[in-house]
Image (cartoon, rainbow, N blue to C red; front, side, top):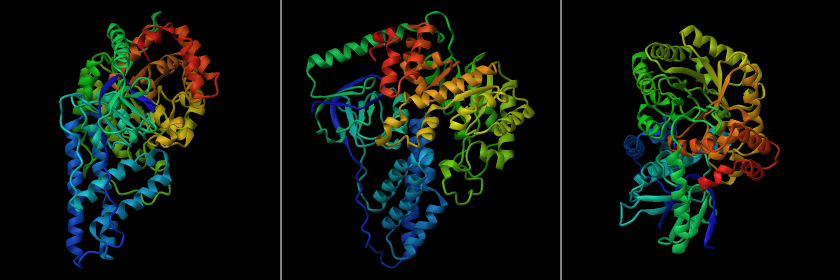
Length: 560
């Protein structure tokens, strides 16, 4: 078979020889026993865990941006105190350090997979940390990516860990193709952030022979093996034509008949500002603040937070900046708080606003810092709470923000209950922001990292569109703004549908901004409304997308 099809998750065209990447670490022998010195074996395990944690942190620092946040979370996995205790206990029973690490991580993995959703998607990240630690203990050579050669290569793998994806660069890698993964997996998000064409959930990808010339279209999901020169030329020309259309679309986001749709950037800290400004973001629609709180033994002081907020606000004078207050718990534990105790399903446990309610002083310090930043800047600062499920939670959060002196407080719509009762929540909140990634996985009980569940993660699922429509309508009933900050906002076709549903702003990874800006500029608001109505009338994601496209003729020029 010379043609494979997957899910295009990062636009662009890449062509080059295929490099098949594998990080297969042998499973340590279950019967292997250490030589009797349990203390020395525990030291080996501790040093290996710390070595891997430090390496992940260093990779994150080199990569910057979202990659740094993701790799810092992985480093925390290696430093988990509970894991260290479990490994030590296994060593005391006679297991080698490698086997103890393997079994220790295995216990955590079972809990993650069983939890599903938000935590289940971390199982692949946990496997990667485990394999790296075992490789250190077994003295296995590191399996790195090849250095820059005569031409960029197409990276092919069953799946890629965040640490591997973060090491990619456009100078070395033309594109990547994975057999597993989904549209909102960490590797997909990082690929979009770095602007590298990518296709995931591509059946048969892992069987591509090394050295095979591969043509990848990250917009359509098309993967061609050993293409002819004519095929390469055709696809490349289409991509060039698309790029010309993108380059012509500049300025604020607007439909062709002048309906304004602010196009904003998702960022993980000040380090992401360069990309946001380079791609023409009008502001920030999702400022993740976890980077300030993770991997430390004490909470960040008010002054430290103030500096980080001011840096972003100064970059967008007069513009909109939406800050998501701390979203911790679950797979992002805070080292300076006591562990929450055993939670049967941590993904549905003490995280987001629920953690804030248990430790209100953490929230109060953050809100004070944000209020001070808002008072010193011309940017329009808004704050929003994650994991809000009820009207009561909404009212509690908004009141806390008002007490702190913040001008605008909203909530994220990422739990189905919030979407279903959006009109009630809008009576309390100043605005909504729909987090389509989590809303999809909570709606369909589908791990967003699992390639086998890609169909359920599709933002074109009619049930998900119904919930988005409910949230937007609930906000409109009270005259509230309702933006979208999930990855769905970065799909040019879906962006038009979201505007047709009534979304008032769209926020995305910065590299997605030009295509969305161009798509909106080629259509009237009425065309967007017709596209949305057509999508809602269908019963499958494929039919919904096709029905919407039928009302969006300008997309032909984008070669999507």
